[in-house]
Amino acid sequence: MTAPARRAALSVLRDIHTARADLPHAQARVRQTLPDPRDRALATEIVVGTLRWRANLDFIIEQASSRPLTRIDPSILDLLRLSAYQLLHLKRVPDHAVVHDAVGLARDLRKTSAAPYVNAVLRAIATKDLGSHLPTLPTAAALDDRATRRRQILDYLSVTQSHPRWLVERWHDRYGTKAATKWTCFNNTPAPITLRVNTLVSSCEQLAEQLARGGIETRPGMWATEALVVTRGNPLNSALANGRLFWLQDEAAQLVAELVTAQPGDHVLDACASPGGKSLIIAGSMSDRGLLVSADVRPGRTALLSRTLAQAGTRCTRVVRLDARFPPFGPVYQWVVLDAPCSGLGTLRRDPDIRWKRTADHLPKLAATQSALLAGAATAVQSGGRLVYATCSSEPEENQVVVNRFLETHSTFAVERPSVAHLAPLIDQDGFFQTLPHRDHLEAFFVATLRRQIP
Image 1 (cartoon, one colour):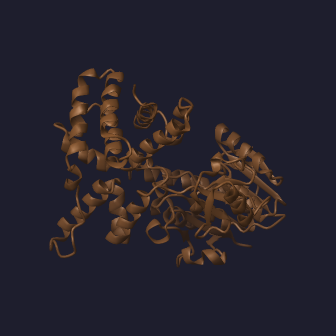
Image 2 (cartoon, rainbow, N blue to C red):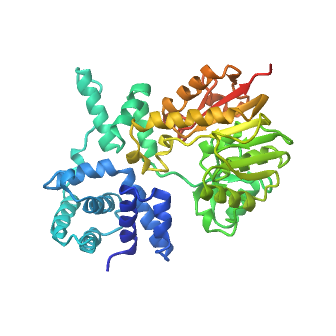
Image 3 (spheres, rainbow, N blue to C red):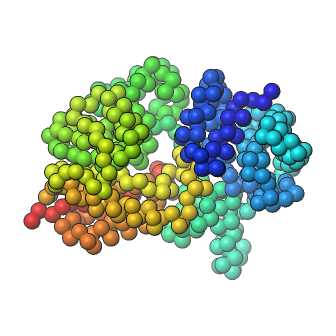
């Protein structure tokens, strides 16, 4: 009998690679079919690992195969990928069990004729050191030809380190070989569980003590003031996981909200707020006094936002559904926060499926949408108020370029350097906040604070 986790993992990969669902939605669907938490954990590990190392695995599969990837049936290729990942990375699983299940899954896919091929490829991967053929970084003295050296570096970053070539080429050219290598290593390391404490009801110290009593160990975040990084155990399986004491939120995402220094009594618009973590941090900085309008455009996201805020017990928040390009308000807010929809290229550690969904061609369209949202959100900022523009993208087209283009047509706004002392090292000479994986050991986020001048 085929292991349920492997069957589920194949289903998730097929959903992602046929564009039927993104990673979170595909996983949520199959999770319902796996009552055993161990199967759910294994399926998740297989899927995330396979997506993370896909280019690396494809190289090895091609080495073991008698045909190029383009001649392998897409469903069989996904089956080979997840099986190769298990053979190479999950040594606690016996090789014969992986191969046996893969052959069975090939037949389940009604690809019976492919079963012998699957068996042969996986046995070659299990018994031969095909990884030794992966591209390596050239040494400094290895080549005098700069073009050849550059090509070999990009081969290593894109194949061995399993990242889109167009993207690592950009990182390499902006930051250099060492930084690009550190960046890809960061993305290939599993992300820890990171919590944000609900300061309206608890503190980091109190929550850490409560978790510790349940055998869950944590450490403070590196930069975020109220972050706890889990080092042992799973708080989601504890009695404390009720949505009131804490929520899951990447540390870099927490810092975006910490740059919004709203005060009690302020009026704030969080224009693209779902799932709600940033709104909760802002509500905490306001001591839950004033008005925080948390908005999103999609019904499902708005419903999720409502649940998040209700569970946390905030009183100053109001949830509305709106398109941030056309906010139905005048300039009445001291703060408007626009965490704009973006490529997500700064979150490849947590969202490895994005590596293979985005191309450079997506950036101009995304930037056009971001520009429209920024212009719309600006209409709700009162004189002297602040507009905070944020993305989880690493690419300038979605960040500095969008902001500078906005400033060219909105002369009443200017960049304001954030005055949050503990985040000063993350703010560049132009006043922009940016986290960089190779430098800060955080996902790549960008924030610009723009102040509307007083006439």
